[in-house]
Length: 230
Image 1: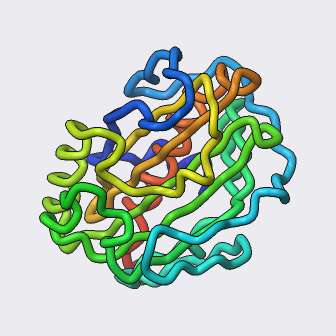
Image 2: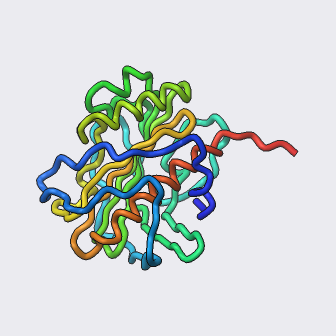
């Protein structure tokens, strides 16, 4: 993704829909505002090579090295479309290492309360990231739907439910954290859910990191399926 992606959100958007339901202490950091801001560039993270992927909830996971390939317009989403996250926009910089990726041929493995099935979710992927030397962990669930309306309806519904509405790789989050929240949003016929946990060391950086990661990858889907002709 490039830094410009954050400017291309257009009709998409995101909204916080839950604190995390996990054994960690209750988060105490306020939710980021609708327009992400930051006061200082985020330092680069060192690779987290000790965090190897473990089995996914169900279906057939695809644990492969972090590679990035431009998707063909209209093709099924795959985690291989996303590499390490290197974001730069002016003086704002974020970096995270991709430590896992999983493809699912349906949304059943990530559907926690039937919302995805009700809105005819077609396919899902998960990504796992590590930043700030492992002091911040992020998991993203990305889902495709048959129509833009179905995606927006799903995102609006998720905004009113608990963190159990979407199943995600909790083994890729920190067991204890000072920041732990979820953002979700629709972009065209896709929905992106981003979970971030951070300990005290990275807690103050987490809100901006979270907001930009969600916005950048949501923005990606604004242009993903466009066909450019000469």
